[in-house]
Image (tube, rainbow, N blue to C red):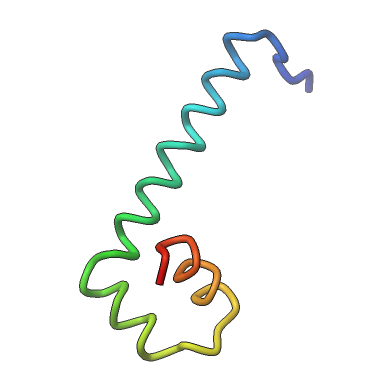
Length: 55
């Protein structure tokens, strides 16, 4: 399988990654996300997300 490395394809992948990151961070800001942060503060992924949110 060959990966398309054209500038348009790379731009599309970068845009998708940016959109997914924003979605994940907005979910982490929700009340359910805050509950997870309070319930599992020692979890490395929770800590990384909290750091990305500026907490």
